[in-house]
Length: 485
Figure 1 (spheres, rainbow, N blue to C red):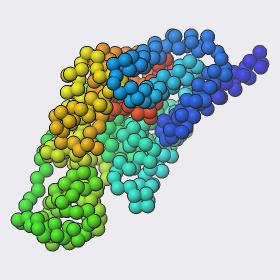
Figure 2 (figure 1 turned 120 degrees about the vertical axis):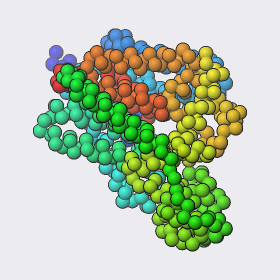
Figure 3 (figure 1 turned 120 degrees about the horizontal axis):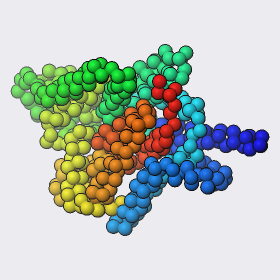
Figure 4 (figure 1 turned 90 degrees about the vertical axis):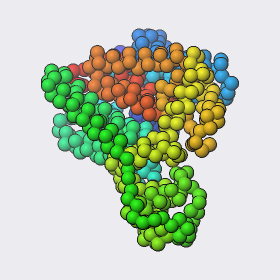
């Protein structure tokens, strides 16, 4: 009996180590992520408790849902022309099965282990975010970081921004477990908020808003303070309305004197290695970028005004910043850029919002022609490329990317049945979190549902792994009264 207990404790520590590797890997390293999945699979084989593992998987309906969803990807190979791309997609989506298999076949037995995982998650986010900020602000020139998107040194800046947002409710839960550390958790939470603001990642900022307002509403509804909840909803609606009104106001520049493009071109070519008649680093017409930048500084569009620009200004123009306000850090700079894009739609290249609209339109055209079964697992890239050509898209060939919308991507890949089943999984999971009063699980799925609108989150291994880990973690009732007090 003692030997069995000892083996059980050793196995528990091994399982925790594997989950730790997965969690750290999701935040910062494909190597740790791959190592965690490899060791997790090996551990299941060595322990060889296949009967117990199968029983755990069988009673977890969300594992069955995700397994069926992966099987749809397998079936999608049958009507695919590009088989190699189809199998590559299956490889990327393998985490969708591997991680839930590791977590769900051997469920985490106690909330104390989950608390340790939460602490590790927050600590990893804290260390990596401080590293990101330090490198970007102090060593930008050494590492040649020319864009705010280079702030994230650990993969996609969008995925990282969403992870930071998820870290905020985790901190709130940890505060309940460790009241002595509440001020430390508060400081870390404020740092996460500042990082989200500074990073200018719209998906991350949207995720933070969902988390903040979602948490407040959760607490107020549980406390039956409906009047205050209504007040929070009103504040949220006012904030959204004000932002929309701000974005609807066109950006106007005052013409101070007639433009002189001959002298402008001559002086620019003296100050920059990028020719006046070429493109900036965002693939925009440099002449237009320069003109707008001068307007934003209330300078006439003339050659002598190019001489008034600092070396920093010249570098900003080369990078594609067409307004001095866009060079500032923080959310306001990002909103200013979005505001310009909304009112200047002639050239979508280099403008993330306009590019996404073009992606969505193209994806929708593909859906309309393949709405029953979709184009198959491997043909989504080919289908998008062909549609870009057919509609003579203004996007440059290198800017013609995926749909950047998870729902559009799954609909054009698997048709009506595929997207309906995917949405069924999401909203069934949402209802499960509400039923079990799991705050973090609820916020995770809310953030996922909303950010899927703006991103192809499940088209990369890291994105799939992030979703799979938290989906599996909250696929069973793990929280106690202590977890959500």
